Image 1 (cartoon, rainbow, N blue to C red):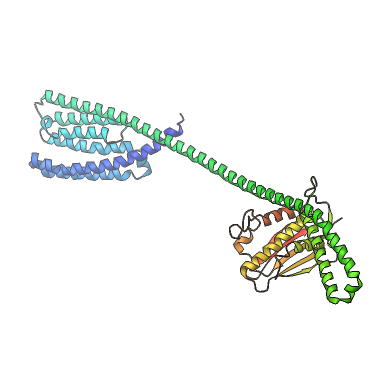
Image 2: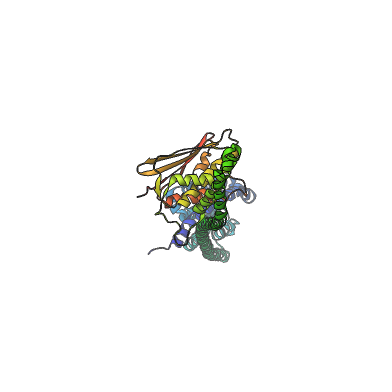
Length: 458
């Protein structure tokens, strides 16, 4: 016959319960047995010495049985060991009844006390309690009927035996219901534990769901930031297209007028005037370049966004990026090292955006740290049939704990209101879309460098 996990768990807990209560009951029994010396002195002083020795012997035997409860065998036999040490005081009391007044001996009340205690205080089984009650009655009958007692008052003995049997029956009933109550309490505790486990599991699921939602929210914020950036670029593109249309004609008219003025004999005779006209021509040409760079960087026609199949000169994209951040680069020495051929394939506007972001970040870091002679060096070289680009500054560098996070969306070391922390994240995605890798290197307090690679044009 198989037992359910609930029954098995209950039996294990009941075994612990029985050991604990048996040990506690035995200690109480030893105390009561020894304290009974006072009863001996008051009622039967002539038996005081023999009764005291008997009480000491019974106490030692109870202690020996209790010591067995700490063994594995004793743990399995706890109910019967408990019955054994309970019978020892009953045997002693029955002997004292036989030694004194038999049926009329007041020690009879000790038998009743032990029977009630076994049913109320000790975790006995039903049958064990009945056996204990019957044996107690049997010992009492022996104490009353064995010689030298003659003329036993049968009425008193019958009443006492019936009272012992009533006590045994009542004790058995207590035991039965105590057992049921203990099982119900254990079952309720098991149900509560099970419900707590379910609640913990549901909380874990909710926590996992919340973690997933948090990741999703971060991704959505990243996408939102990139869309916002794209909208800004589109707005700049529209503005650049309008500027190109509106500014190009007056700029061309001014350039033509300046060219005509330069060819005039009077201008050629006056060096100062000629120098001013040349400067004006260079200024107009710079305006043309800036508007053209804005259009290249930000304007995309509908349906061809993120096209990666267009060849372009990286050197031209670098020139455009430097011109577009020229106001930020004031006071910063920019050097470059490029091969003769820089023709690559990809989205020129997006690469310009990456270069602008790298140059702007370098300038901002150097200005914030107060670098004495700020400088940026752009190194471009062909390696393994790919164009490798490194933008290196002599600024404060990047802290080791931040270098692995610089490409995380919304991670920034700038002050509040000075950036969203999306520039490097978007740049990383752009280079990844071009089949390359954007990575950072740094030596804290000396320099920082960002490198990426591009595919050559076919």
